[in-house]
Image (cartoon, rainbow, N blue to C red):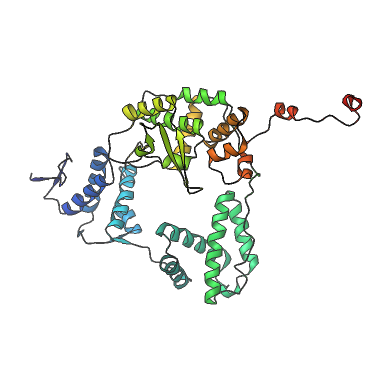
Length: 406
């Protein structure tokens, strides 16, 4: 059988030139490699695409696909998981080629939602994912607030409160805030168009209070045991150990860890450069010998060989920087495997413990706040927990007590 080598000389598998979808396969494999997928994964995804396309011929290279068409295209009763995994990157590939068809809105308020989509994308310039989140909230609200016999002009503040109360039963405080913000954006758009009465878009937003759930500092002895329990015989273990070691000894946020690059470590100057997106500032920290040893072992034995600049990379394809959610998930996994009494702890507990250790070593609150990247002492105070021993040091004598007559 005639075959053609992949266009990239570093790729080590062939694509059948006789396949009626060879152009699809070649372009898709090129894109997968560019995105950092490893060779075994590329093989599986390309094979799934070939089977799917050849089962639904004709499939010209210039054809566009929608989400519903992809679901039907990759329907494989024998290996549903493998084909579903290939469908996701193929959808991203189609978007990169401008061959993705957005779903057609249907229902009573199609024109309104379509106009809202254009308002968000063209006037406000929001990303497609953010536009989709706004539209999902708007559709859900319309479905709940407007039965068939009710018009849009009849929407009242009671309908808004009922919707938010219903969502509050299933969402956390943060998610509920985002839902309310998306709903308010939609209602303001409707008010401007004269679709609903003025004032419907003005309602109290769900609140989150700084002290409603105080952060917990993990005892340092437990942090040491947790770090020691991480299996460092694997690249994944070396990566996770380095991440949590940095967070515990420098008080880094998960978002700051994801922004670290190879250039963030200045071995000659002995410094670690940390970008703090929350405050739009840069923190220059001294690179201690223990931290340098941990990082060097990870770089030599744990980090995959790649040209990507990020210091910490995903363990599975495509290669790229870790996300904050991935770090939190890795932390919970190591907590479960360690068997330590850390129920309810999160990676931020490492940051809070860092602040507490500095306080116990008589470091001033202002200096602690600078290291944590805080703009106000109020924010730093939330991280610090006064201990009974500290309170005894500042205790005042009671009126009429033994010291009153001295």
